[in-house]
Structures are given as C-alpha cells and as structure tokens.
Image 1 (spheres, helix red, strand yellow):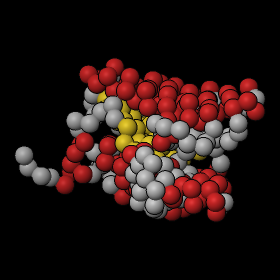
Image 2: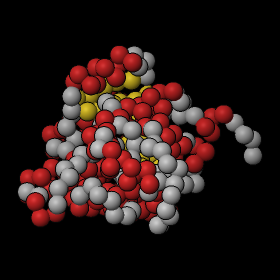
Image 3: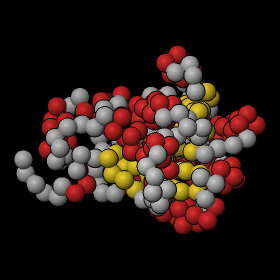
Image 4: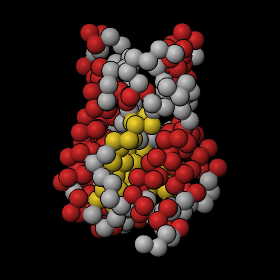
Length: 258
C-alpha cells in the first residue's frame, strides 16, 4: 500500500455543515476548508454567518436557514440540489437544549428540542441521500453527545435526541453501505463553546465536570472537528456505524476519585 497524502485530505469534496456558524460547527467548517473541501455552512442568524464568511472568503458558502423547520430544511435541500448538484459530506451538527427537570417541560419545548436535534438530521439525511449515493464516497456525520451514551445533567429530552442519533448512525450505516455512504458520529463531552460556557461559569459545576474527566481539561472545538474530518477522509474508508467519544476519557471513567 502506498501512503499518499490524499488519503488524509478532503480535496474537492463538497460538504454541508448545519449549525456551522460558531462553536463546534465553525471549527468543522475551518477544518474542512483547511483540508481542501468546499463548504456550505448553514445557520439561522445572518450576522454569525457573515462573520464566518469574512474569515473564510475562499471555499465557503453560507445559507440562512432554520433546519428545525420543514421550510428551513427545504431551503437547504433546494440549494444543494440546484446550485451544487452534488454532495460528498453531510454534517448534522445543529443542536440545542433546554435544561429542566423532566416534569417541567412543555409540549412546545419537547417539540423544539426534538425537531432541532433529531428530526433535522433524519430528514436531511434521507433528502440528500441521492446526492451522497451519487458521490460513491458519501459521508454522514452526526454530532451527538456523551449524553446519548450515559447519564449527564443535561435534561432528559436532550439525552433522548442524542441517543437516537447514535442508533440512527447504526441503522443508516447498515442500510446505505452498498450505496457507498458511510455514516458515523462523534460524541463530545464538555467543549469550550459559548453554549457550554453558560453552565461552566458556575465554579462548582465546572469542578464537578473536571473531576469526572480523567484528562482534567475541557475540550476544544478543534478536538471535535479533527475527529469529524478523519471520519470523512479516505483513510477512514472502512469505518462506518461508529460513535467516537471525544470526551477526555469521561465515558470510561467510572468512579475514579482524583
């Protein structure tokens, strides 16, 4: 086997990243562009997307769309089919959370978290399946969470959506393998993003998180984006149906006092 640099690059690949304007999504966009991909970053807020576009004037397109809604998803689907007519990578990264005791959720809050985290990934994956199949080297990455692998204090609905993404990864990987589509997931623990900082600024909670993390650090967005990029590379051509925890050891810690 010849070790060629192309096995570790994404040259010429066309990639869609939902929730791509900040945090983990923005890191994935940057990683992909650095590896030679053309990227369409999708988010709800124009200001965030314009800020991202200013950073990466080459290799990046942006689209304002709320993929938690039927209309927003259709806007994205039409954009990819009409303007690109091809797709190699779909990263279902968009996500949200409402932290509450289970008995306090309203039906609207349930629907909002479910539609954003889970239904968007399900609907976009199947709507864009023909283009990913046409690629013959298609990749879908679901950004799930360790909350889908074990209990963490993030709320039952969030955990439900993330666990469902893990199972969706397995089902689609098996169903679409002969279509030339690999489907994998990454499951981050706490990552230093604006969303995480809203809870990590609580010193007691921060200390609890660190105490349960063998590496004793909070992850960085680029830790997740590197894992996502690897799973999309030719070098990972025999990897499908897997969920890779990017968690500093959290999910294998058990009870190990500092």
